[in-house]
Length: 129
Image (cartoon, rainbow, N blue to C red; front, side):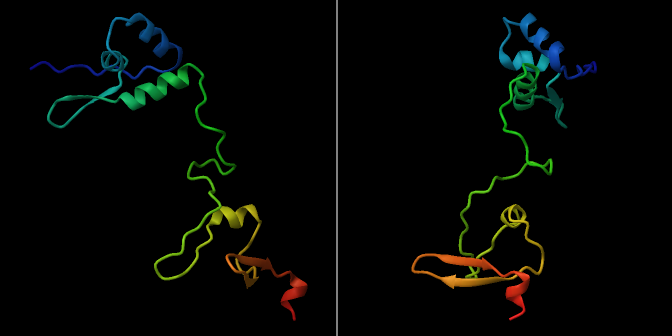
């Protein structure tokens, strides 16, 4: 059986041009012709459509995601909602503490309302009482 040479994954303008040349092909055939496939352990070819479509979108200059956070990592955005954990605790995530500029050791006064909890940050002058 002859070894099949894997095509290098095309990106940018080369990808766009190749897709235009292959207008009569199916999208799976286009992805494969542009190098977006892998060979499985059993020797079967598996087309990576998601990678192909993302590369095509990027090549066209279409921005689907909003700008990333300042730390350069993806992740979830703040929902401003938390859930009581199974042990009864409330966990306030680092996204909120970073937005507020809080540091380890910062203290809060907790006041309970009818259906709400207020956290009042204690300043240096308040903490010395």
